[in-house]
Every structure is written in structure tokens, then in C-alpha cells.
Image: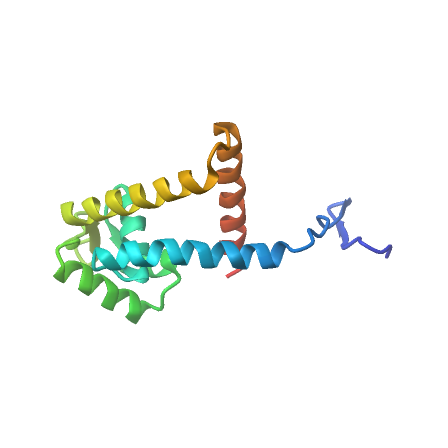
Length: 159
């Protein structure tokens, strides 16, 4: 097989994307920057990083989620997801309710307090990102968001 070629798939040649020098270091730096920005803001609101992931998932989901969905989406082991949700429920940020379709299941929902935390944390982080990006034009920001989504989706598939 020729160098740089991975093989054939359904009669078409698959060629890997070219390497980007320094990409791994850049991704590491971005991860550290996100953590440095997010952790103090979530901590200020009394929410752990795992709790934040659950709140964000519930806010984006538009309805109740099963504990299995919570664990899968947040990449948390089921017992950890249960402890995180227990804490969110205790703090009034989420609540559990029996699934109206399957009375054996319990769904986790975002409470009003949780929605308030999500809005405040997202606003704070978005302002910080806006400051960091400065004069970057809107089309470039949209492109960045699409690329980050592609990267996150690829990462989800690799679990």
C-alpha cells in the first residue's frame, strides 16, 4: 500500500487527513483554558464540573432524561451519575419525575434554579470567549463552532 493511504472502503480510497503540526498541544491548551474559565464560574454557583455537564445536557434536551441517558451523555459511570443527580436534586437544580409513558422509569428534569444557573454560567463564559476572540467576525465564529462540534462528535464516537 502506498504511504499515506489507509486502504479501500467500498471501492473508494481512504486517505487520512494531513497532520497539523502542534494540533495536540493546541487542543491541550484549549482544554486547560476552558477548564480555567469554567471551573471558577460553576464553583461560584455551587456546581461541580460533572454537575455542570448534567445541567447543560438537561437544558439542551428539552424534557426529562433517564439516568442511563444522563450517564451515557456525560460519560459518567452510572453510580457517579446517580450521585451527581442526587446532589442537583438536593440543591433544587433538578428534579425527578416518573415517566408518564413507562411508570417504571424515572426521568430527570431541569428545575427553574438549574435553568438559572445554566443561563448565568453560559452568559459568563460566552462573554469571556467574546472578549478572547475580540474582533473575529461572526462567520468565523460560526465556522469555529461547527469545527468544534465536529471534533466533539468525533470524540463521542471514539469512546
